[in-house]
Amino acid sequence: MNAGKRQNETRIDRLNAEKRLPHEELTALLATWDAADREYAAEIARELAVARFGRNVFVRGIVEFSNVCRNDCLYCGIRKSNLKVERYRLGEAEIVECCDAGYLYGFRTFVLQSGEDATYPPERLAALVRTLKAKHPDCAVTLSVGELERADYQLLFDAGADRYLLRHETADPEHYARLHMPGQSWTRRMQCLRDLKEIGFQTGCGFMVGSPYQTPETLAKDMEFISEFRPAMIGIGPFIPHCDTPFASEPAGSVDLTLFLLSLCRILRPDVLLPATTALGTLDPVGREKGILAGANVIMPNLSPAQVRAKYMLYNNKTAVDVETHITKSDLQERLRKIGYSVKVARGDYGETPC
Ligand code: SAH
Image (tube, protein in one colour):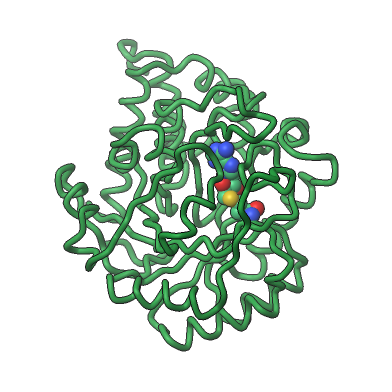
């Protein structure tokens, strides 16, 4: 062992070499890291991402098609108990229009996200997926509509949906219980993730950084869950309080810890699709660029119609990357160019042959 190395650098090296760390070591790393460790991890993560994907960033156009939700997650601005939310839902024609515009701008993945809205039952979503896939057979469709029965996930997969995002939120059941209402079950959410993966979706899990009651111990469990579950995608962003939720006066998560965790995820899973999230861009105007330099390789610009954007407020001051021209001529492309990266026009599936 190199005696000159700091203890956490040795831990990061070991995570890179063995793709795992004993639980105590991982917890200690997450409890004691500093800026130098973060930079050290970012360098390794960046090299891994560049070796796999080149200096390319995949883009996904997200359509937030409904903010109606039957759930009551304590952190979320569109929880059903928040009576101040002006609820909306887009019709199929509007959603398809957003995706058509996205196609012309160069997007080859559409992400459809919503609250758990019973007026969009699986059959209706499946028909929408079929329409989109028929119109744009060269595109991937990602769904992020929450917890469903396995048979319904199967229906959506059979309709042609390619990917599914369902953050596990926390791998610690007690922590989960403190972030949700009694009817919401950690076991069920984890079962949903297993079902999605078994059915054949490219499946994404993930969690918020700095959610109330999170500790180095719960974060270590998140990383261990990611090792074991082997997701195709990992969504990580800082928790940001929303003024009309029970967590209104909780502090926001840290950008630096989010960046460190992005790097650790890249080190753990070199080929994973890892977005620099909207929440990261909300807390820091160059958060997404920092995320890419920490090992992320995906950005998800917003394709939702302007008039509904402000209503899909998961947290205060939620921002968006806008693309209103071909993606290769967009502001985003220019921002990425400044850090030596560029947008890749491609579906960007998990497990493709490396560049
Ligand atoms: N209904 C879908 C989509 C949820 S919104 C589902 O259940 O998967 C997408 C993600 O936003 C959530 O999984 C959560 O991790 C994140 N989110 C919600 N509220 C947030 C907040 N206040 N700060 C940061 N992220 C938040």
